[in-house]
Image (cartoon, rainbow, N blue to C red):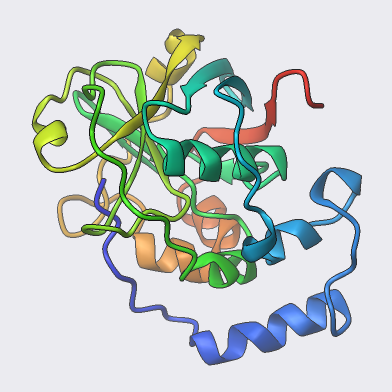
Length: 228
């Protein structure tokens, strides 16, 4: 689940122009839950402290699963996850990497302009206080202090990840059968397999994933339970 650094086929120099064009210059001030994506374009604004415990409900093309997050386990990670879920970041994205006997990963936004806005919004690492057991939810990294927005769910116990600094933020408390049913036949991405290529997914978003890997499980909506 180390994400790696991308070498995009869409030059990043063009993405701000696309963003401005899409938003008519400046992004509108409506929030993600009000019919726009403007809040997601401003990572520096999404820094609310998470409740000590909260649940995030994920509606997918294969069913529903619920993640219970404990801020004490990983405070920086919990805060970031709370803001992402609350503001609609995980709506209409794909579970693009499922490795049987290991983990399932998602978090590449369907709109590459949104990914561009978040690419440098890194949160510091948290000490590992809980093990990466089956059902635990953890941020993906590309090395120390590199967490941004990609998440993976452990499909089995992965204690070796604890020693490598992967700090779980919570665990699936409902719908693990949904997680187990995530489409996995594409396998891992290059260079380990022929599944979705992370760099291209970040550069082209859902347009690439839907065209080349149409059977991927889709997350249609994620929300904080009790908050809409």
